[in-house]
Length: 140
Image (cartoon, rainbow, N blue to C red; front, side, top):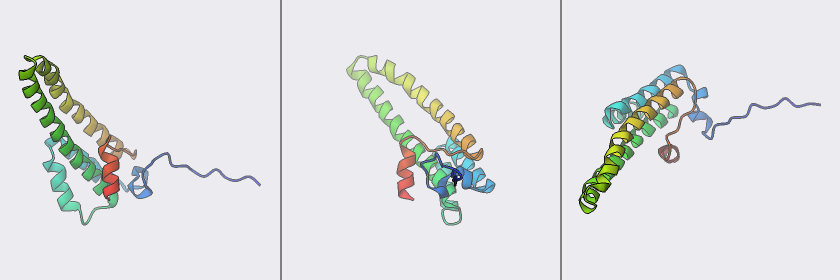
C-alpha cells in the first residue's frame, strides 16, 4: 500500500504565522505594517497600538517585526554616527571616510528590505527580518 506524500512546510514559522495560512485582509494589514516602517518607528508603533487587541497573531508578528527593525536601525545609525564622529577625530578623518558612505547606504538598504518584506507578505510568502524576526517570534 503506497502512502500519499504529505505536503511539507519549508517554513520555520508556526502555522499561525505563515503567510500562506493568513487571510487576504491579514496579509494586506501585515504589508501596511512593513510599509509604515518607511516613515520610521512611529508608523508601526501606532499600528501596533491600534491593532494589538483586535488583529491576528500573523498581523501582530509582522507589525512588531517592522517596529523592532526600525528601533534596531536607529541604534545602528546612532552607533555609526558616534563612530564616525569620535573615530574621525581620532584617525584624522579616515574612519569618517569609511563610516559616512555606510551611513548613507544603510537607510537605503533598509528601505529596499522593507519593500521586499511588504511585497513578499502580501504575495503569500513568509518573511522574517534578519536577527529581529526570530526574537519577535519568541516574544509572541
